[in-house]
Length: 310
Image (cartoon, rainbow, N blue to C red; front, side, top):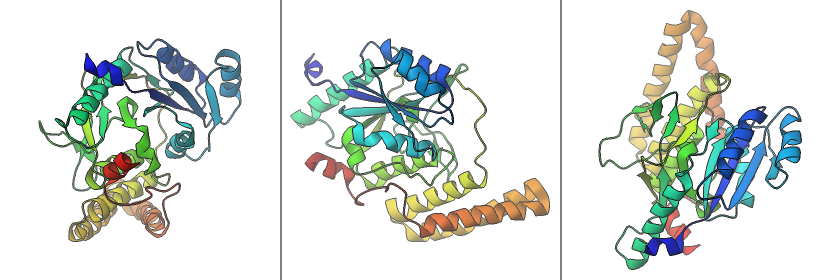
């Protein structure tokens, strides 16, 4: 098939923290892939040396990086400067790579490259996302509600503006122009990045339902609390004002989001909820006043065009 002459190469980036057994499982799944990754990277945010010792003893050929220990977004950003593949996939130590995942995605990207060269397909850069399987459930991309909660299903044929991160392959060149916003918690750094590259950047996200990875939950995730709440409000405000360029909508959203946050906290915790709301408001104000750590983008506008030129 013509596409086979233009297969991409994948950098598989694995974030880990205090879970050497899960990291070992993720690495073994990468070695079992029907299409071996071009590059394996591990960034370790652990608070002890168990993972480092395991990597040296069992996987000495895999490039190991000390993580920044500032959260998931910073851990992913740590690997961006050393990526050498044409495309990149970010997973963690709770992910098992599907045996044919990379092969399926490679064939879809190769087909897209052929169509683009012939001028018979879209010229915009392609991001491919598949499902994540966990305890018999299939996780799909969710559309954000007006208040920014990722709770809605996409309609058939609707443009995707979100991804399932651990089953998503990005063009590596994309990260010359964007990075994960390290201030945002609760997964909103991923939501913000996807919104940016689609709504303001000219990229497209394609759903590939057969390309699935497995998620094996470990310990209960830490409750990000007011940090996640502030991140949701900030990411949604930024989407409306900067990516969609709808300032009136952004202003209305901010008023309603703050009122909703206060009411929700009071409903859950009574008068003590006012303290939680104040913590959210302080975090939000901090986000609005400070630049994104590591930078969200070098420029606003058509990232896709910049990628084509660069």
